[in-house]
Length: 167
Image 1: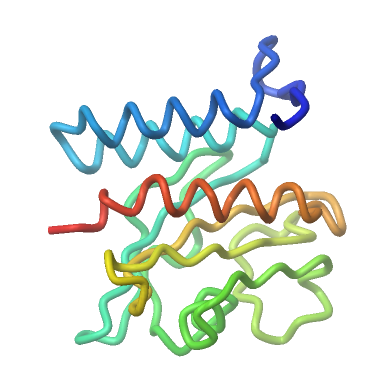
Image 2 (image 1 turned 180 degrees about the horizontal axis):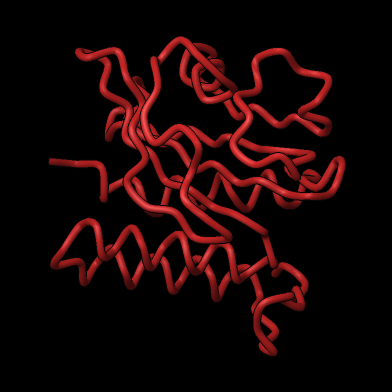
């Protein structure tokens, strides 16, 4: 069992297993995809007190990544962009999590907010686990904000919410 995390944005203490359970409930009761994804983004952001969380669709045929929903201080600077750009493009190409502790030192970073210091991109795979169909993008104003525990939790979130990318 994961230790509880005190959330910056709420007064609640939310253990990781409770977050994953809440995400499973959203997925299993989904009526409207965009509304479900918004709830997911809000839950993930509030769970750990992240400053910003965005959920993206990856369209391999069109060669673009498109923001579906976001939770945080404002809309992303790039609501859609070429699949080959940014940390998201790297996560899709590598088919793995990209965790950058200092975005100012990584030339792949597409500036979304001037105050972002670190970012993690977590791929969401298709049912077979072979194609990246979406991403979870989490940004922080702190350097090296995403430790192994956060990395593992976001990977688990990706697996739980994967059915929201099945069409």
